[in-house]
Length: 244
Image 1 (tube, one colour):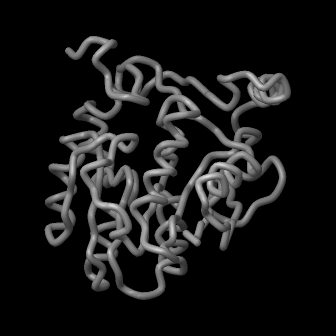
Image 2 (spheres, rainbow, N blue to C red):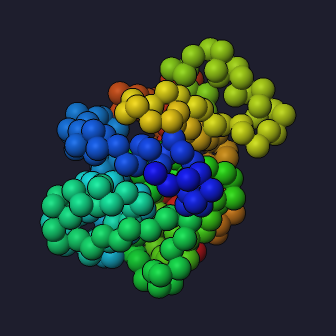
């Protein structure tokens, strides 16, 4: 087992265990088929990516986005840190290209070569540390062509489904500008170390995109059922940023 000090940048023990859980990989596709959130992010991407082009999927998992868009004529490249996920992705999307890499370290990919990019299903929230999450978005900006578009999904820090006490605790940490504000740690379903997922505020998500240089073209809020939601019912957001 890899020691903690050798873990990749932005990856903690919980995420490493999650990425290497055989049971998680085996059941992942079935989970996506029944998730309303997996359906709405595909639909959102279809609106954001109107014509075929070169598409980069950051945190591609088992390749569901690449599988969907390659049949529509897109040239797709998927990036993920889990070799087990990528093995399945190559079966699901045989016409796409897949690269094992850390999203914070994408120097091997050439600047300005993609028309579209996506970072879906809370992938960005799994990256530990503000600086590392910023690096992921900066990498997306660098890799896109002028007028290229990035679709980003993020969880809501104040979603009432987290529970009243947890939401109040997050509000206090945010007010006090603590470095761990937004980090929600939970027991992992696959017997690994606890998994921490960063939850965003709406303004924080937008700021992350605009500071990288993106113009917000579209922002939609949705509930856990995949339908439009407001207030504390908002489970998360899908945003489309345009590289100006």
